[in-house]
Amino acid sequence: MIRLDGPAGPDTTPPDWANADALTQAVRHATAAVTVPVPELPGEPARVMRWGTQLDIRSITINGELTDQAVAGYIAKYATKAAECVGTVDRRINALEDLSGLDLSEHARRLIVECFRLSTLDRLNELRLAQWAHMLGFRGHFSTKSRRYSTTLGALRAARVDHMRDEETSTGRLPLFDEDTVLVVAHWEYAGRGLSAGEQVIAAALTGVPLPAPTPAARSDQ
Image (cartoon, rainbow, N blue to C red; front, top):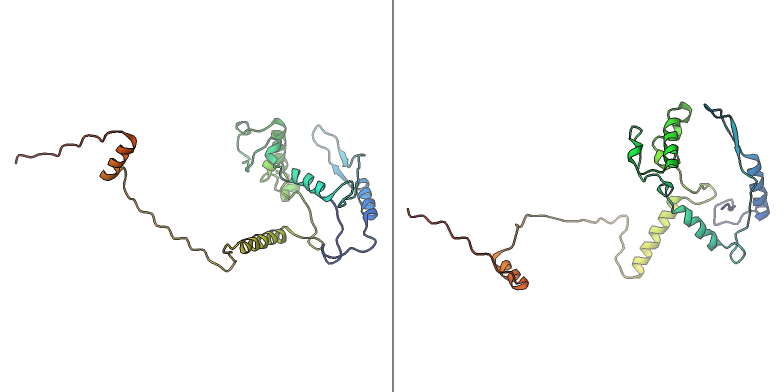
């Protein structure tokens, strides 16, 4: 999903030239112009990766063919998926770890091994592929944004906090603010094990199990 905000952010109107036709032209140009060269590898020839011929560009409208609700649902479906959905694990993997002992699909295992191999190349150190091998090398977020023309995840989290605080205030619950301090006092003390004599009588009455015979006291003739 691609959008054009106004010059001062998402709450301002974009200029007249920033319309759906301009966005369509920009997407068509980008898909035709962007390429990524892949160098020759042992047993593999050099390649050039680019977008394919299939390109479907549609405008998102409120009541049109493709509504904003439909797009939000589609994005949420894939945004909630994790790497383990494709056969990997939900934790970091050590480079010396035995992958055969992990519940990995063969495809995911090959990608993880390749991440570790590529991480040894000096020119790829900044990608931190070894640390993110369990994510198949991807360490980013599923969405990309411009800090200048759009919002940030921090701003969205702050908005959610404010919303929940307003909800608690409107329902009569005591809200907690940043300047508040929550003091939790807890003191644990060993009270004993088993039942007291009185508790044994109550337990016997409830369960029907007779009380055990009392142990005779030790006797001394001296």
